[in-house]
Image 1 (cartoon, one colour):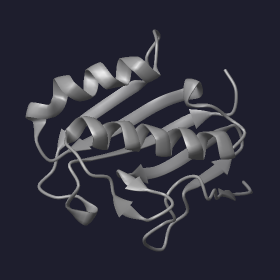
Image 2: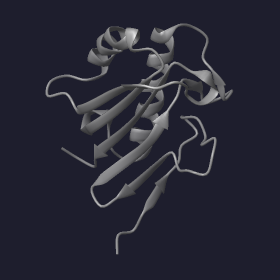
Image 3: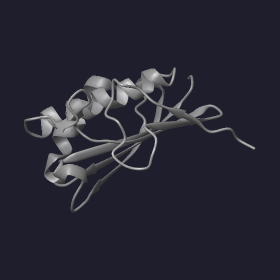
Length: 129
């Protein structure tokens, strides 16, 4: 039987529902979808898609760090956007956090996200590469 280890950090937003920030099982870490919440105030960061995307990546990094891994060990990302017109902006920001080989990725447009934000990203990491 696989032991599920919940990951929790004060450096990322607390879960706003019945889920863990991340779960570690064997050599994989599954990070729940992160939205652009400031972890200290639990409010959505002010600004456009750029500011929101940077905050989402900061939150992903905080959870990755708390799991004794790194965002550099990302295997797969799923990006949810309320407007695919923002696709190229998110791509440019993603290049600041990752280098080749990039993680596998899916990007989908959705009608709405929690707290009416513009972006949410979840991730799967390996414990080490």
